Length: 557
Image: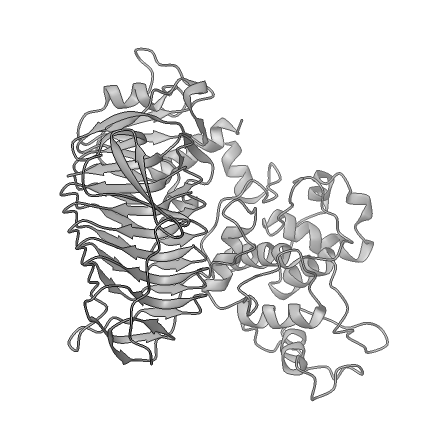
């Protein structure tokens, strides 16, 4: 195997620009600062917010739609402040600033950057990683180590940023800036900033975990100077560099998914990051690039790396330094440069959601698809896609049912005339049929290759889980209720009452006779698993909740 570096050609892959008082290192799709300074239901929202606030400590409520930045406001979800800026000016250490779903920007009165001071928690909705709690804006910050910067949020010592979506649309914009502090940044989404999601510098030592970084023009996370920190269980997707690590920093990267970026991780200067149990794959150039005197710890005899670094377009590990990189206990398909490599069979950790290249962060069914993928109920295709708009056959649906519910036999299995014993879905169809989920047609056929309509999916789930409703009144919720076949009305009514139905983009339009897409099946099945106690609820604006029934009734109380 070749063990040599690659030539760095000025002007082709690497360009140095003067950027105000800081220098910005652009590397064909990523960015690295050099180490030298150069209109929702308000009652429902209120109950959701109450479920998230801590049991102790002061809570300040913010809602950009109904709030008021005035004395006496902010103490309840029904009478909140209007802006985060005002709430933060009132907050003391130990305070949680609880955000209602909504858009927070200069247009709604925000003043950037938002300064989350020591001991303050800024929280939106952790369960959806802030999908509906969006902070968008930029302001000037003078960094002690990198001079003038455009940032959205400044995170101070012992602060917490959780359950929000943050975008910095400004030139060289950073969503969260961490400078010699130790905040926790968790359960959030950082998308479409014009440089990176999080920048860590000085002696910063943050915990960055369970976040999504996607579509940022420079990097997902940049770590510079003498910073440390724990970066754990995040998704880095479709950005320049997933992570850019420089200076003399020594962060620990653990359990992250780093996929479909230009390069997964870019390590420069004298940085020595520790990598354990990461999945680094399907990046369009290299999985890991190391230049200058960078020296990552990819595992030792006593502490194997257990990183899965595969299927990156050029090299999985590209060592362009004179150092020998030790990589023990990893699965790496190919590498360039001097590497002491001891292979190990490494699988993606169980429960790790798969990042599909055709299911962006903004996709309405993304959370359902990722959750079912993590549970092994559904899978994608070898090219890294999920094909969310493809139709589902009855045989494919039977296979999904079996993985989701593992049904036991409630009746004798049927030998359908058109399902031979050597057919790939033979056993899945028998199990789903005997378990009460699927039936055949009057002529004893199953039609395994027929695309399954939405109404059949809902009837199947209602029948298999024995869901019932006292009457068919819930069907009046749908604008197209007249299109529901008579034989399906009881089951569809039961599925509606039990909140199995998910309608996108129009929640009142059932489209019962349309062929179900892979995304729609994922949403229906996941909601059925929630009803059966097999999964945690995922909040979505597209779940049908009929007033006066089930959980929807409790929100109206």
